[in-house]
Image 1: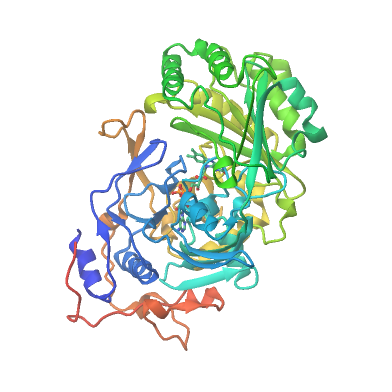
Image 2: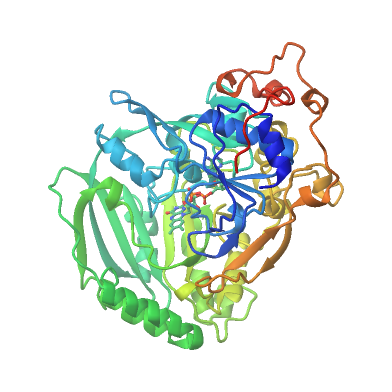
Length: 581
Ligand SMILES: Cc1cc2nc3c(=O)[nH]c(=O)nc-3n(C[C@H](O)[C@H](O)[C@H](O)COP(=O)(O)OP(=O)(O)OC[C@H]3O[C@@H](n4cnc5c(N)ncnc54)[C@H](O)[C@@H]3O)c2cc1C
């Protein structure tokens, strides 16, 4: 470990463990990106988290928090310090009467589901998987598919964060509401979320049914019950088949009934599908046939020929099999625009340029399926909305997700052209990208326009709680107007801890396939050293501020004053802790 880190560490409270390792290889779940952080930190308590933030600030390092790394972009990549809260995952408080639950922020949804069930409780809604950490789910605006629910984070009542100065701050609708709205979708850029209080529902089972339909019928029923006849509805559009699978579910008191076996849920079908996708990278024109064969085997070759049903606890029944490594590119737009969006994309994929009105050629391009079609409605939510909530303010939201599988971690050849055209259509229709996913063509200024005042307010809060840019990196620069438009072209001048990308390269790692290794600029190596001689010279403390040990540095007060303070104690020179690697 860098001796200067050990030196700074020796000046902090020796009773607080510092659980750091070097040589960690980080990668996203889909193995789309890899990075090698200088330190990988696995804290187990709030004082440990506060201490590592203090240490990072003194050592001039950027901090990235990672949950389960299910965001497929380079959002969680860093060459600086990577913090993971997998060991900070306890359930702290459950009120079975009111359903109010407080957990440590590293808990995964799968574990949380089991723990809630022990108390007769459940999350009201889920996305396709439950591998994510609760903080990760909140931070990118994860959603399920139901017009009776908005983002998964709509059940959040309060959050506690450790800010860049090491201060622990709690926020909610009534307490620091601006920080709460910013933290409800923070993109990891505000601080480290350490505790989450949310409202759970009494646990419930769902009865689900899925069946194949023609696309024409789906579009015909779009406004007459498709999305409203059941509490949970999702559609998988099969573009070459001009068909769709509709999955519908409702709460039920029926006895549990396990789902039947299915083609690609079993080992043989799974490998057949995987290998067909791999083959299609060399012979893309087989993809319509692959769609016909695989989805025929899975759901029947004709509309209505096979109906699959089951009754399951919601915590498992709402999930689905996401199969292989994948790129996902998902956008949110008004639900009523769905038929036009799907109609135009369908026309484009079938070579009908006149109907499509998408100015990119499609000749020789073959894509994967399904296109996921899901919904939510945040207008029913009486809680505060996140500033960066991509869902519609005025009515229900449609999500279109163009999935591309990466068979054996290889990128499919259609990716760049398909996504260019798909994103063009989405932008043409006024859609907003899902923050976690693989969007590429929107820049900070376009997103500022789309979010307007909400983006400005988010940026204001962000800047206030993290003035040096300890929690931001290249991904944030690419998508967010972190510094004013008329500012210097290099945001590093304003945000001294901001981490920029130095290069992308093919990793020398077996099994990495077409994954990319992301390398940051490691500014601390090139910048002139800025030793911490005296904390007070760096942060302007309010007149009555007394630095406090991390364990007691909790505040229910306004965070703006506190952000300027120093939340930890500096030990006198020479009285330090033993150095640990
Ligand atoms: C197979 C698959 C299925 C998916 N299904 C859905 C779906 O149905 N609906 C949907 O909307 N999305 C879906 N997603 C996206 C997924 O829900 C998001 O990417 C989510 O953010 C992942 O959570 P995570 O714990 O892995 O977070 P990570 O990917 O590790 O991190 C995401 C962001 O959260 C930040 N973060 C993590 N922990 C903290 C913390 N404690 N404090 C502050 N910031 C933190 C990170 O810095 C980063 O900015 C899916 C992704 C995959 C791979």
